[in-house]
Image (tube, rainbow, N blue to C red; front, top):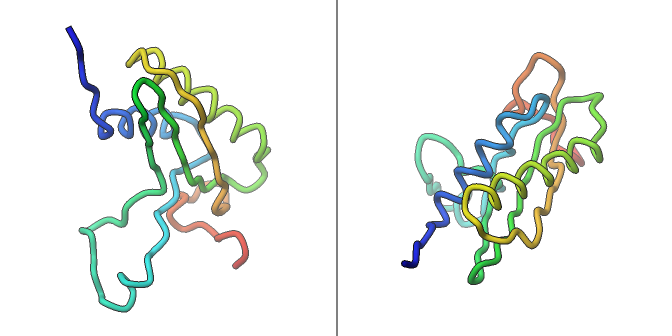
Length: 121
């Protein structure tokens, strides 16, 4: 019997895993030029910077994060990579080839990542 696991399920596993790690949030996805010029909205909330690519039994995950100011960026990023890899492989049996983490912004302790200071701002 073959079981097909949708990309939505893989995104939910990755998002839930990241949300359980203190001191970080998944960043909002960048706005496309066509959305800015055309006033196109994708809904009440902007999409998050979380993408899953699947090729057969292999999965790659790209995550953009906002991290609390003062945290070790490399250490937090590595913890996210380990946790996402472990949870996807445990829950699905698929092989995670890569978890690519991009730190997109910082936020002050006690604030949420949605009000972050973007890198380069």
